[in-house]
Amino acid sequence: MKLQQLKYLSAIVKNDLNISLASQSLYTTQPGVSKQIGLLEAELGLKIFERKGKHLNSITPEGKLILNEVEKMLEIESKILEISKTFVNPDNGCLNIYTTNTIARFILPATVNKFVKRYPQITFHIGAVQPDQNGSLIQKGHSDFSIIAQDVKPESNAIILPAYLWRMSLVVPKDHPLAAKSKVTLADVANYPIISYEAGSTGKLVQEQTFSERGLTPNYFMTVMDVDVILKYVNMNFGVGIVASVAANNIHDDNIVTIDIEELPSCSAWICFSRNIFLQRHTYDFIEHFCPHLTRETMEKIVTMNDLEIKKLSQSFSLPQY
Image (cartoon, rainbow, N blue to C red; front, side, top):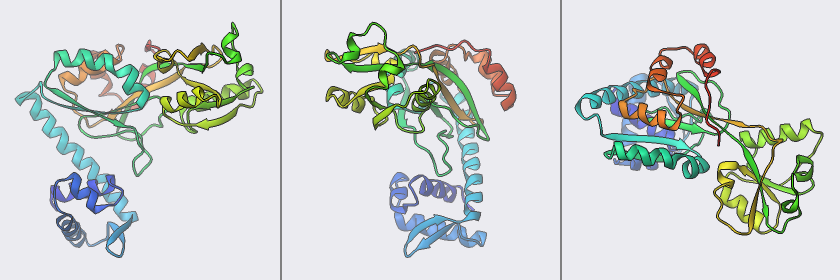
């Protein structure tokens, strides 16, 4: 068994069992990847993938167990490399941040701007939060963070920490009847078609729960995740929009009016990463600037705690709000 074969397995899964895409991501050839996977299956004496013709069709039950261990082994390899970099070249590296469009556009820039002035050699990759083959939203590579503006289920081998609180606001055309009201209630909003976040997002869940508690039935005309799309259809008078306040407060459109909705409670956002990550100095600094309550001293304690201890400590944090 070779470490490179394990990397091939991981790449295949991350590319939806497409060997061609996996080989491209690894800068190698498709026949080479196929050959190594075949050799590994022969060595293990079992199939990791089910095949349909020349294509991989699914992962076998035993393959899923193996792939779980593969990811752990690759995390350990990455951690070893990060430890060495800390001593050989501490101010170089890449932070991979997986997050939402709203966070990347409106909340991250202040931290990135300050961070690069102190660590000009550090590069960034900002990717979209997407569930993996197990439905997890948390990326678990050696330099990966997920910053997620919705509730996250506890996961083995992952640390999940409260990052900040965020609120939602109403956005309407300036000539809309609600724009003239001194105070807008959810009962007012329920009288109009609503354009907001898609099902499953925390913002949508909070909206639905709050409407329900007040005996109201909202009429969702459209649900999407991109704020720009919501604004586009609000501008076309298809409905009123409910978006994160941090996005609403940064709208530069004279035709749009932003209105506070006091009845909608705050939502939580989380910063998540693997327990196997090796936190370098620049990583501590990035986290502390983005989440002032997560100082290096606090983080050094957290990485030694179990999930229950982390949850208890998290209840004492004073969180920033957007």
